[in-house]
Image (tube, rainbow, N blue to C red; front, side, top):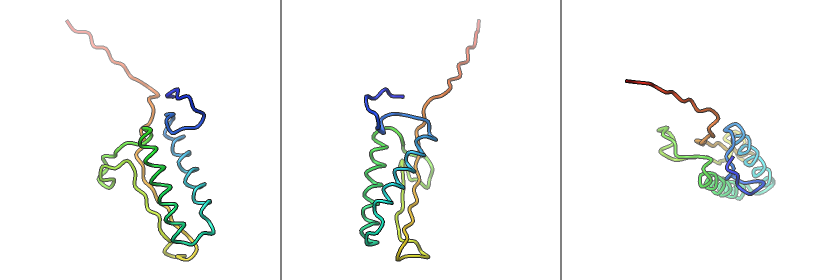
Length: 114
């Protein structure tokens, strides 16, 4: 852990599984906050939330630029849009991130030579 003097912060580095769960929870909570709003307003607010959230995660070092061609060098991508089958009452949120995990094991090799 980074020993950041905070209880909750993206500055604390944790295992990737924990990061993924934390991000899923944050996205789900935000999406629930925007229920019952007009579709365009909900999409706009959720898009802003995700942009700010992922920018913060990148600034904290949780996510880093990816070398995957589909990511185009970005640390994250997301899409927020009305559901194709239920465009009047459902929103689809898809996101892709490149986490920077924490070191859990280090392997050391020594070679002696004359």
